[in-house]
Length: 133
Image (cartoon, one colour):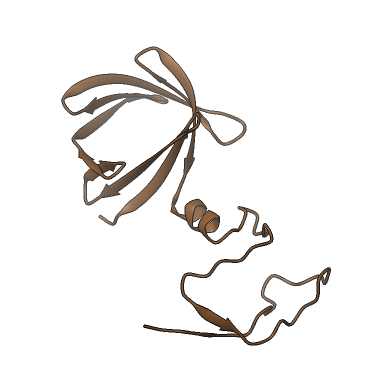
């Protein structure tokens, strides 16, 4: 099993969740868990030996309405792709927010477009020379 990382946004709090070879890490802390689907939208979740009934309902805006121990809250989940897009300053639809960030240092050699130019999806914008360590 490969590692998968998510971020759950609960109100103004962000919780990092990683599933790695059957182990659950919540904000970097190993957490014992198991769950069993009872029926569509309902699971029995056992966290650190404590049984917690959970209901999960998807909403129209892509978030979830989660009820745990009778308390309902809205939760938005970002998967690895969404987190990577955010890290690079891109929106889900591919539109940029004005700033482009790269995973490594580089040198911009030329700018091939001007402000206001329309560009195609695969059109080169900045020829670069990357620095590898």
